[in-house]
Every structure is written in C-alpha cells, then in structure tokens.
Image 1 (cartoon, protein in one colour):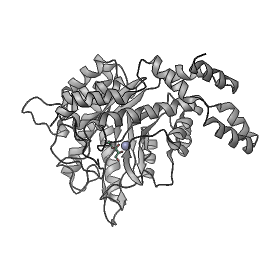
Image 2: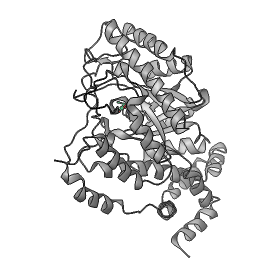
Image 3: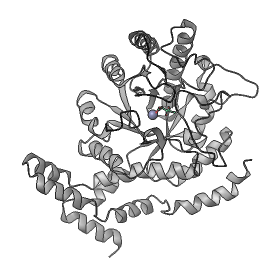
Image 4: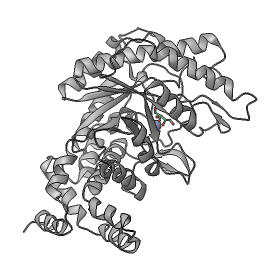
Length: 413
Ligand code: RNT
Ligand code: ZN
C-alpha cells in the first residue's frame, strides 16, 4: 500500500474522505501577488516605496523589467499546485518607449501585455489601484487629502482602475477582484480625525459612482491599524472600512497583518460571513508588526483556512497572498508562502468538522481538545505529497529554484 493509500485509510477511520479533500482543493483559486517578485517596485514611477510599508533585504536577482517579472512568475507558478490568479498593482503598467502616463490617466491598453500573459496561461487577473510610491502622494495622503487637486487625482486613479478591472474580467472571462487600500494617516496625534475619514468616504463614493458590472468586478476595501511613520492615526481603519463596505455594498478585505498583535483574523471571518455575500483576505505573516514575512504553515494560517472550510465558504472568500521578503530568494519566498496557504486549506479539508462541531455542541470540551490535538499528528504530509504528484508539481522546489538562480537570476547585475 502506498503512503497515500495508508493515509487515506487512517483518515477514513475518523470519517474524513481524503479523495474529496484533494478534489475540493484543486478548485480553490489563490490570487498570487505579483509584487513579491520585485519588492513592490513596479514599472511606472521611480519613486521609492512609500505608504508605511517596507520591503527589507537585498537578495540578488530582483526582477527589473516586465519580461523578467513575467519569467519569474512563470517559474514560480510552475512550482505551485492548484488554481491561481495573478494579482497586479496599477504600478505594474507597461508603457511604450518614452510614454509617460499619470496614474489618473491609466487605460486598459497599458495592461494589455498582462492580459495576453494571463490568457495564454488560462488565468484570471485581480487588480489594485496603487495609492503609494508616487509624487502625487502629498503629506502621506491620497483619497483623504484636504488638497482637492491631490484628492481628485487619486479619485481619477480609482476610476481608471475600475475600468481596467472590467477589461481584465472581459478579456479573461474570470471576474476581477479590485482591492482599494490607501496608506493615508498621521505619524503624530491629529487634531481632526473625522475630516480625513469624511474625505475618504466622499472619494470612495466618487470612485464607485462610475458604472461597472458588479458581476465582473468585485471592489474590496482593505483596512489597516498603522503604518511605519504613520503610527498615530490611520484613515482607513477597521471600523471605517467595515462600515463603508456594508453601506456601499462592496466587499470588506482583511489582511492578517493589519490588526493589533493579539487580534486574529481567524476569529473575525465568521462574523463577516454572516453579513456579507463575499469577503476577501490578504494572507500574510506579521512578525511583531505588519512585516509581511513569508506565510508559514502555522497555527493562525491553519485556523483561517479552517474557518473558510468548515463554514462552507470556499466560494465566498477571495483568498489572496500579500507579503514581500527581499532577504531570501524571491521565487522561493513566493512558492513557500503560496504552498503554505494551500497546505492550510488541505489541512482544513481533512478535519472531521461535523464530529468536532458535535463535541462542542454537546459541550464535551474534553474530547474536543483531545481530538483537535490528535489531528495535528495525522499523516497529513502524505496527502499533501499526493496532491503535488497529481498536480504534476515537484515536492522539491528548492533545487529547481537554485538552478534558476544560477542560470537566470545571477545574470541580473
Ligand atoms: C499594505 C497592504 C496592501 C499592500 C499591497 C502592496 O499594508 O497590506 O495590501 O501590501 O497592496
Ligand atoms: Zn494587504
């Protein structure tokens, strides 16, 4: 008997169907962020990374051009099993030689190369307006700026991005999730907390006022607690973003690096599922702050996956990755993090959820604790390896990446 057959038998003893888990996993799309490939640099502006986020590290071989980034995405995606979408930021626009286009004037044609890339690979695209790393960010403010010319510029950017998102959906045939996150905030204690939030509200209303097909473009709104250099006040706080999303009928997005350190997104998912048709996630790993470390197969990632799976919400939750580590091989960072999201989903699909729920409802908390602990040492790895094999993806991705590093990345000097 193969290791998988043996694992299947062991899972069956507790009422879990490993075949069904594998079948379910392959249909779950993970939206993979393009920005791990180049430290969130993009192609449209020489401005340094801003907005209170930071990529640390200086590992050689970072992608510098669209062609390099696309080649790296191809290599990394070939080592990730399952269904993927590619998640782009507006700063990854590709211009003709000599062309300079402001973010307020971006058009679908500036993303045609990405559409061709996605179509050739049978992939959907997700999108993000880029409200950072740009000279029109004034005093750390964009959509909440008191300067009307700044605020208007970014409103136009938001509208342009909705049009581009609709173009993505039309071209690929896959709905596009468009996430709005602004870095706006203050380093020190503000005198007016309401004003910036009122302007942000007005700006969002203006962006969303353009007609677009809501079955093709899902606009999401991502909250945050603080950024580097913006420690005292964040305009797009959790309360603002949840309330705005509910009222405007858009989708809330939770990034698990965007809460106070003892708060967990896994505990928030159920509440949001009760009040929203869809919710969106940025899966990341905060270490002491929103540091965007590579996602691990750790307790919180597993707990997030369990909340999605056991609440039967795989089709309602838009799962995306969001991290950027420049201190290690960027392709390895990509593959490790995305595989860990998928591992967590498989782990969740292999839980005896009905049994565990029954133990809770009969208040047999003793048995519940024992069984939850027992699940940790089930032969999960054998089921995961079977998944990789069926997906035609090598378990050992490190040697492939090392090879790519020697042949391709070292030449980027
Ligand atoms: C920043 C947010 C945001 C960005 C990306 C690049 O704190 O998490 O999602 O990481 O848009
Ligand atoms: Zn995020």
